[in-house]
Amino acid sequence: MRQVVMYKPGDVRVEQRPDPTIVEPADAIIRLAATCICGSDLWPYRGAEPVDHQVMGHEYVGVVEAVGSEVRTVKVGDFVVGSFWASDNTCEICRAGYQAYCVHRVLMGTIGTQAELARVPLADGTLVATPGRPDPELIPSLMAASDVLGTGWFAAVAAEAGPGKTVAVVGDGAVGLLGVLAARQLGAERIIAFSRHADRQALAREFGATDIVTERGDAGVERIKELTGGLGAHSVIEAVGTQEAMMQAIHSARPGGHVGFVGVSHDVAIPGDVLFMSGVHLHGGPAPVRRFLPELIRLIWDRTIDPGKVFDLTLPLDRAAEGYQAMDQRAATKVLLTL
Ligand SMILES: [Zn+2]
Image 1 (spheres, rainbow, N blue to C red):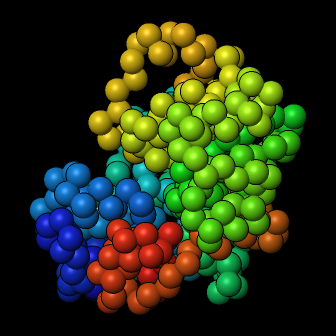
Image 2 (image 1 turned 45 degrees about the horizontal axis):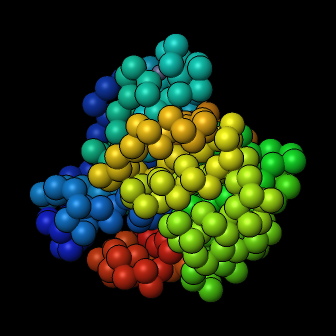
Image 3 (image 1 turned 180 degrees about the vertical axis):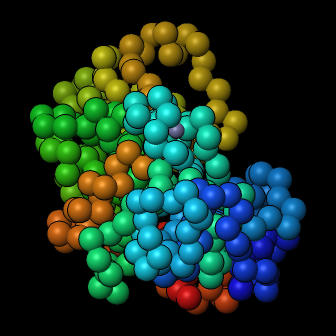
């Protein structure tokens, strides 16, 4: 099969690799219907994380091609969506809704889903079957559910977005934009998106943003204060992972407010005195996307939401290197790879 491999920062290739096989009795093999490039794939691409001949990709939708002897809930021919952590969905941590921390978890990025086929461990717990074969136009949205939508949704839940709330969203990448969509679905009254890119501002508005703030850092915080009677937002989504973004998020929240942080943290250090004096709740980390998948699939299937709009560039898998380049240069928000 063909698979994307990152040799070193900036060097992405598509190679022939052996087809995956069932290793454990709880495994399934899926044939991907599409795959995509994640904002977090840019960290190794830019040299901010070590990388050496690494298989890439952790988002996936596709058709089950084989199952191990213990697999019960999915069968050959099912169209399935899974998340970036394989999880048993039965341990105490999973049952509490924190499948990203399952005691048996397996990181799908170590398997690599930018490929024609992928082995999915713990298939019963990890995979959620759709009600039938999706129409082709639903595939980008189901793909988004695998990570960016689920992650944005968790951020909005962690930030306690809901009726009567003002939600501020730091980060206008795919996760931030889908955090806007999630906040709207959860009933937020006002949604303020930080963005300085016209195309992303337009999509944020389409997804439900009521206000756009172009300033960043302290100036951005000042704008949030002005828009909220000096108080700050009830809920803030942090979807970047840098020091500036985290501090902007904490300072944008009102005392007693909630910050949901899902940007993969890189060199973030929160000063203890700032945290102490802020009076905000912080919750986040790797999103337990599996918790939300059944509901997200239903909303997509019913065409209530269209998160697939975050994909603004579609390329065949063989041109993955161009996709990485486009996202690195911010020429694309998110790239769908077709097979
Ligand atoms: Zn578990």
